[in-house]
Image (cartoon, rainbow, N blue to C red; front, side, top):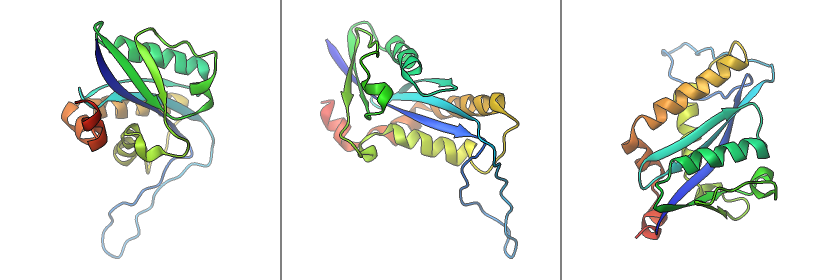
Length: 175
């Protein structure tokens, strides 16, 4: 049986967004809008760097129910003759006994405080830099739509996904 590595993480995006550096005309300070309200959507995303494949859901809460939905989504993206190893952090909804892990998946928890080992973190950096920063939202539906559009744009280029997430140590592990 073939084994495939997947890396999973979550992004919280919302009304109180992220401000990033931006270019401006010399002598003019660019104005960046920022809302002060609180409303969030969570993108649960996973990537298989070897194949440049990805799976995600956008939900209103980060909890066990959302994680179960996401695991089912990842499971659907794996070939029947393949077993997926999903590498993730130790968030509460990743370690609960109420988690229903599909038969074709095994969870592998990263050591505490080691986000640098999870290539999925790079997905969020890219989405924030290109779609989710320096902007305002009209409400929850707009946040969800923006997260979905950002995700679709990100995964449209498998070569980009592979270059962002296929770390040297992952390549060595897949030999």
